[in-house]
Image 1 (cartoon, rainbow, N blue to C red):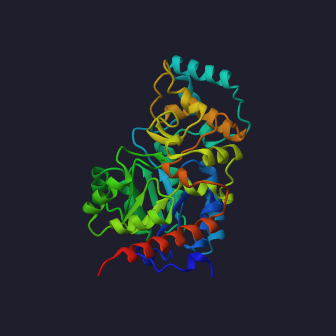
Image 2 (cartoon, one colour):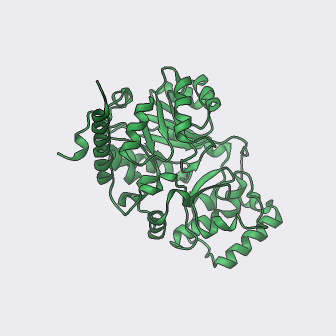
Image 3 (cartoon, one colour):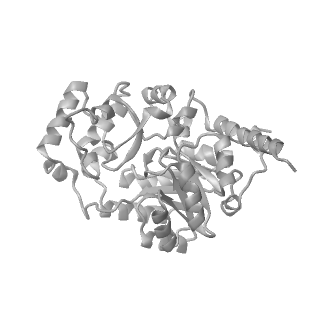
Length: 369
C-alpha cells in the first residue's frame, strides 16, 4: 500500500469528479497530468500556450493515456485583445524605444535566435485564436474546463450543456460574484502567492472571502500551496480542495530544463516577483537576470498584453530552448520553497497525503473534549 492510499480526507467535489484526493494539479505537461490522475488527484492541463493546429493531436494523446480518468483543460481568455492579429504586423507597430531596449538586452546577454517555432514566436492572443481553442476543448472528453484569465458567458453555457464542470480562477470578491452570475460551477480562489497571473490579495485572506460569497458553489484554494499541511488548512477554512501548480515543475514528468530546475531548487519564496515583463499583465515568476533587467533604472514599462509577448516572445523561447542558466525563468509561486530536488509525481503525492494525515493527527491531539 502506498502512503497516498491511507487518507480518509475527502470532500464533496472528490465524489463529484471521481477522484481520491482533494488535490488539483495545474500543469502544461501532459505527462504530469496523467501522473496526477493516476495518483488520485484531478489534473488540469494548460493549453493556452499550445499552437492551435497542435491542440487536436494533444487532446487525442491525453484521452488515450487517461483511459477514462477525469481531467480538465485550462485556457487563458483575456479581454482587450485584437479580433485578429498577425505577429509580424504587430511587431512592426511596436514602439521604437521598446524595440531598441530589447535589442540591447539581446546583445548584452548574447541571446541566440530560437531555432524552433513556438506559441510565443508565431501566435498572438486574439479573439480568433480563443475561438479556435474553445471549439477544440469543448469537443474533447475533458470533464472540466477552467479559465485562468477572462470569463466567457458563452463558454460557460456551452461547457455545462455538454456536462463539463466549469472552473474560474478568481482573485477578488468582485471576480467571484461575476463568475457566479455566469453560472460557473467551481471557484478557484487564487491568492497573491500564486505563480502566473495573479491579483493583490494573499491566499489566506482571499479564500474565506470567496467562501463567504460562494453559496453552494465549491471553492478551491490556490496560491503558494505545496504541502499537505496547507491542503488540510485550506479544507479547514471551508475550501473543498487545493489547487497546486509550481510544485509539479520539480517532477521528472515535467521535463523541466535543467537550468530552470536548478533555479527553482535554489530559490526561496522571496525569489519570486510579480512583473509585467513576461506577458504585459501582472505575473509572478521566479527571478532571473532577464526579469531583473526590466526593473533597472531607465528601463521602459512593459507593454500591455499581447504586445509584450510580441516584443519578447523570441527571447523567452530562446532561453528555454538553450537552457540558459543566466536568463531562464518561468511562472512560479511562493510555494517554490517546497522544491528541494527533482522528484516524481507519485513521490509528491505520497508526501502530500502523508503530511495531510500527520497534520490531521496533530489537530486531533490538540482538541480538548
